[in-house]
Image 1: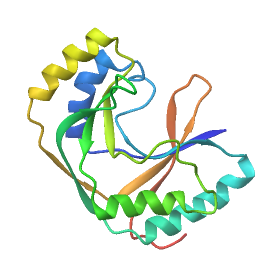
Image 2: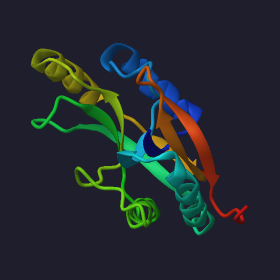
Image 3: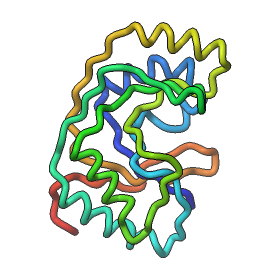
Length: 172
């Protein structure tokens, strides 16, 4: 089965992201706005319990922290993807690093760029128009992050939460 590890931002950030995603992101109906902590990966059913135990240890050792979003950015020229740029901070970078250093050694396809995608798979003309307009807007969001989620992919390509890991809780 295919899994992923993400952070879902607060409702105001999700609402703002979805106002663009509805029109500019073909994955809009597959997953809510999110910040990806680990690329998707395959894992057999037997290993899921071990992964969950590891993720609980990571979450237990993590304190809530804030993230800030102040602008949009892009992966161009590599891809016509536009995103809310999440300002990297020590706590977020440490959390992402711990997840990748777990015994599951979740591979990084690319360098970690904290972001929430709002548009992707745009034509060159669409990209230029949308990014040009969004780049003129001012975005100011602050959000307290106190949990992350393990997701799994359904047969129809959509993603759903397998388990949520709240920071600072004792192991169960």
